Amino acid sequence: MSPRLFAILGMLLAAVACEEPPPPAPPPPAPVRSAEPRRYFGVPPDGKLHVYFFNVGPGDAALIVSPEGHTVLVDSGPASAANHLVNRLPELLTQRLDLVVLTHPHADHFGALGPVLRRVGARQLLVPQTGATPPEYDELLTSIGGQGVEFISPSPPPSTPNAPLRLPLGTGVELNVLWPRPPKEVLDVPEAPLEANSIVLRLTYGDTALLLMGDAHAKTEAHLLARGMPLRATLLKVAAHGADGPTGDAFLQAVGPRAAVISAGAGNTRGTPAPATLKRLEAAGARVFRTDVAGEVQVVGDGKTLVVTPQRLPDGVPWDTRYTLAGLSAASVPAATAQATKPEPLEPEAPRGNTSKVQPAPARHGQVQVVDIDDLPAAEQAPRIRGTESRPSRGSTESRATPAGGYVGSSRTDVFHLPSCRNAAKIKPSNLVRFATREEAARNRRPARDCNP
Image (cartoon, rainbow, N blue to C red; front, side, top):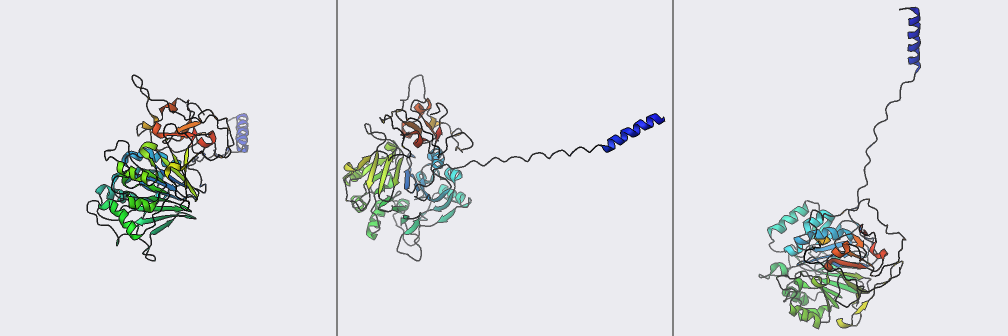
């Protein structure tokens, strides 16, 4: 190698030696874990008692939300109600259910519970624990037990064996189990053992009370009367879907209800509610709300009165009518004079505009078929989980002039519409919910994309 070439090579090696080594490649970025979407989106506790009697067809289902936010689901309706409840319940809950009560093992009371608990969960389950039960009921309880749900009995505590089981739901609110009292006290009614030992609940808040009778038998009512159990109630959840037999005259005299709710399915084969039951309720002065006629029935209490809001009202009654029931200490008044009121002012109150009754667009027949958004196939009606979609926050101060007719939505979805929206015409009248202002509509719902109300 020539000296010149050797010198050039040496210079190159020296230059390379003086260069700093390249920095190490940066590590790949850690995967970003998206925030888990909320499963529930109910509003925080508002200091009032809320009870929702759901429209589940030929069955029973009701949700209790105490002033402090404790929640109790009483029955779950039939299996056909599953799609409705797995969408409706998250609108009202902020966390899993504190307690589920199965009043008795009939499929129209427990049929939808499996899908409901997979959707919203529960901490405890109260069952009557009396008599033989059907295999599908036993399978359901086995499945629920595998989910870590604690089972509790309606038996009275040993320290107070003569008193009903008391289930406090926060300050001033109590759920009492009046019947049954296994294992020592059960009714032997061979023709109806499950109905006779259906769980009977009395919910009290201040000067108000609600009596929930499940599918109680006439002999159950007679036994409760003979024992002198506390039965007085502002509102009665009528036994056995209004069947004739229970809800007798002596029982109604002891309860003295100002209103009654009957959970029944339209066109059911059992003929409930029975005309004789309706006649007895009318004679007792109770205003009757039927889920097959009024849809979902909502009850709100402040400890002094109960305000009842049916989803549907008779023709000619203003759409925002609510019925106020006086507390137990008030003088008895017939149902005909029960006070019908306008909604309480909203905070903040927006211009109300025209408050005339909103009529849903009629279904069209012939060559054009209207597909109801509540009747989508189950695969498309899967439980909705709120993600990152844009929606007004609950604390938003955004205000718009209220259009004529206010806003509307479906009890089975989480959106709201203008009455003129294209999809508003597809809501079943039985599921139609109306809102006086946008603020009221946006509390638990998001604007529909078809018209961005």
